[in-house]
Image (cartoon, rainbow, N blue to C red; front, side, top):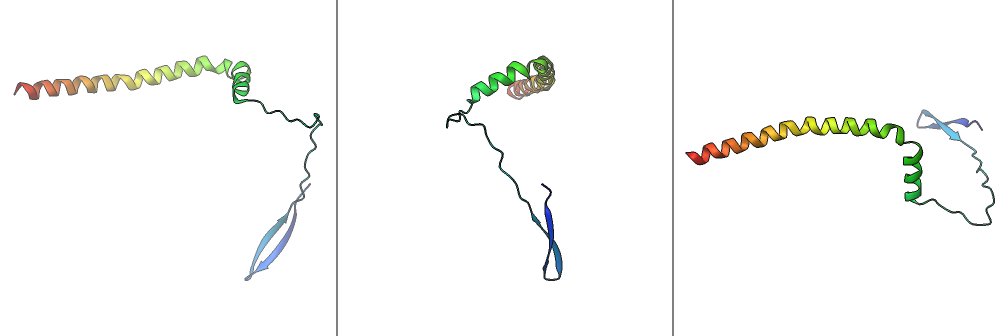
Amino acid sequence: MKPTIHLNQRHGLSMPKTDCNYHVGSMPNRGGRFRRASIRAVSHDYFKNEARSTFATEAAVFSVIVMTAAVPLIYTAMALLHLVRSVAAV
């Protein structure tokens, strides 16, 4: 249903006032019981149907990012070790 818009005059300003009439959708009768799916069932269904196709691609990209970030960290650790050794030798 489309909203009905009325103009509201307040302190010389015209502000739209929206009146919406929403109807609640009916749920099928399940004998008075409503069973919620557990987070485990929802995640299992997601990984079974939707995430399978993109997991390998995302894992490969993540591995490249980790390796790219690891190289400068290794060189930094080696430089700090060299600095400590040179200061200790003095």
